[in-house]
Image (cartoon, rainbow, N blue to C red; front, top):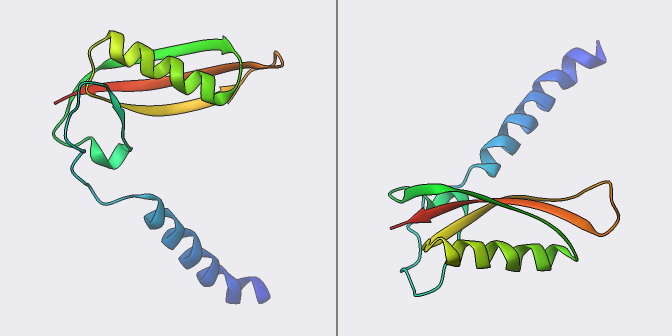
Length: 102
């Protein structure tokens, strides 16, 4: 009986949480001479160039810097970091990003 009472509330909370995770589309910032990190909701109207990945020792900030270097080498205007994750090896990080151009 208690479960029937809380099920609609639980469903409403879960569904409202999902809508909070989806951002409204926004325009990306103006392109500069260096690649810029943008969010997924800023990719509309941009041309996808491909993906890059990095596997290295260091910190998450080191991996972000390495992704930016790879985006710059590919002459991308923007990039979206998909994931940054640690591996089973202590101090080793893996990351992926999608590259975009105007």
